[in-house]
Each structure stands twice: as C-alpha cells, then as structure tokens.
Image (cartoon, rainbow, N blue to C red):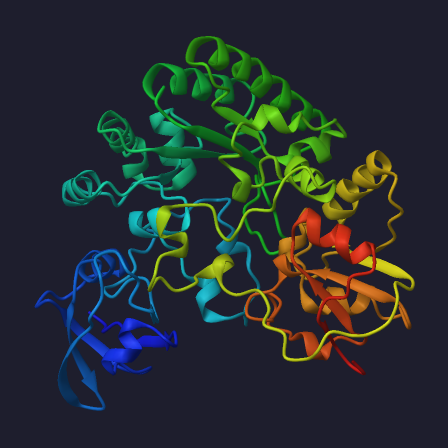
Length: 459
C-alpha cells in the first residue's frame, strides 16, 4: 500500500496552520490507515483530526484544529492508496488497445475499480466486484456509480468483454439498485454485434430487470487505425438512424411507464445520421453530459446565455471534494503561464475537430453568429476518431500552420495539464493559440472580443 502524499496546501487553511507541509506522507488519521481518498475524507471530516505523518523519515503527530465538516486545505497526490483494481476484460472495442505506443504511461492503465466509478464517473463492468465491495458501497452510500452494460444477454456480454464473468456480473447491478444506489449505465454500440435486435432486447431488459437505473447512455464505437479487431468498424449513417429510432421508441415507453426517458443517444449518433438534436428539455438534468449526451444543446444554451456552464466535474459528490486529486480528464486543463494578449477582435478561427465543426456549424446557423474554423483532421488516431477531446498536438499544429495573424481559439478539452494527448505542449505550436474553456458562454465571449491566455511560438 502506498502512502498518500500531500501534493498541495491551501494558504490559509487549518492544515497549514497546524504545520503540515507539501511532501508529508500521511501514515494514519486518528490511528486508522486510509485505503483511499474516500476513507481519508471520512477520517478528516470530523473535529480536530490527528495526523500521523512521515516527514523525510521522521514520524510526527499533528493535530489539525478544525470544525466538523470544515475542509483541511489538503490536496492528496492520488485517489487510491492501495492498488488500482485493473480491468481483466479484453474487450474488442477497448480504446486503450487502440492507442499507439509511446504515450504517457497513465494512458495505458485499464481500471475496473468501483471507487473510481464513484469518485470520477469512470464506467465499471462489475466483473471484479465482490461481496465486500457491495457491503462498503451500501454501508457508505457510495453513490452514484457508473456501470458498463453493453448487452444484457449473458453469453453475448461474456463474448464482448472476453471474460466469462461478464455473463453474470450484472447480478451486482440488480442488487445495487435494490439497495437504493443511484446508477447510470452505458452501452457502447458495436455495429453488427449488440445493435439492432440485440439493442431492443437489452433495453427491454433494462425495463424489466433494471427499472431503477437513473439513466443509460448509448454511444457509438470509436475505432482508431491501430485496432487489430477485424469486426470492429465505424457506425454507418443507416445504423445511426436505426439506433436513434430504437432509442426514441424506448424513451417514449420509459416515459409512459416510469415518468422519465431513462435511455439517451449520444450526440455523435445525430451527427453521423445527419439528424437534428432533441430539445434541451428532453435531456432532463443532463445525467450523461460527460458521456457525450446532450452536449450540443447544453453548449448552445450556454452560448445563447440561457444556461450557466457547469462548475467543474459533475459526476459523484467527490468531484470537488477537499483532498481529492484531479484524475484523467478531470485534471487541470491549462494553467496560463503568460499574460492575456491585448488588442481588438481581429479575424478569428475556432480550432476544432470534424464533429466539432459539424456541431458548431449548426450553432452558427441557428444563432446567426459568424464562425470560421480551422478543422483538425485526426491523423494521429485515424479511423473514425473525430471528437475535439482527442485532438493531438501534431494534428493541431498541421491544421494551423498557415494561419499567420489570425486569432486561434483552442478548446481546453483537448488538454491535460497543458499537454495534448500525444504529449505535445502548447509552446510547440507554430502560432499562438488562445485556450478557451469548453463551454458555450466562453466561446461566445471569445467571439465577441474577450481575450483568453495565448500560448505558442511568438506569443
């Protein structure tokens, strides 16, 4: 078991006042060794927690004077202090198997850990879930959780996951729902495998076996040029239309029976199909926003000023918990190291992906706001990968190479700690880009003349 390390400390804060410091290793709190950030939060939530720490090999006891529920001011280096429960499935469609070699090591970690599902909204298949896990989830009310369903047919699910436990691991989903745990599901739709009649069977089972599911997001398969799976291919327009029609029919049935739509198609399906998006109201409280469901309508409403952008991550009440480190797509997107540029509006281009351009063209048409684009073709991944969040630095550099003297707006969704997924840094781009938060209001402000931090050569 690794020791949680204090990675940052707010000033002022109870922990700073008590003398704790960045780099201190936490051995225990109140005599209890925490397994993860969940344990840690529960241990420090009370009045005056007592920390046993290791500071450069010296053991110290520090009492942090604070009220019950008051934040300590500590941020921890990792979310899990024991081992991440890695995934032992071998799904044909797993995107980690479709990554090129040489990327950051953390990108290749496959987790199937219910704690990361609770903490950060990661989807788990429940194939490694145990009775002890169930007891903890129910006792500590670790909710919501996010579960990959894909299909409810036992044999097909085992085949898709390439794991015999996949045939019966959804039994845990029934128990979790029966115990009142909020759960959101996901179906990755594989053309010719779990779509068509299989999707109908799965959604019928959702109504019969899992009616307490809060939501189910259906997303298309992403296929990069690195896949070695012969039957994994992109969804066709006709298949996208059929999926939308099936989901719409079940939405109506669910609404009539349960008073809510339950199942939603991701925005990508509507772009592939060339279909119009449903209304913002039809998505309810946008329970699957981070899964690409309802993103366009939410963005449009923010752009038009009728909806406030979400503050931080949505999923799990630990999303902004004191002490919980940013992880994966929740890491800091960009911390400006240079000042904001001066000047007027000038000529503006939005750097975006193929799907991003298709969506923003619709927004431009509906809002009457002129938009120009530097479209990034995703050569790094290839295949049908066309979302803005997976734009690689080398492809962005290629797309803006000839854009001298243009204000270039880059959505921060493609960055993690200021780096693209291929490891390239902003400073290596051939022209300065303004990094704009990935919400509609920020884009509207940028197009109206507001300046954002500019980074790149000659900035």
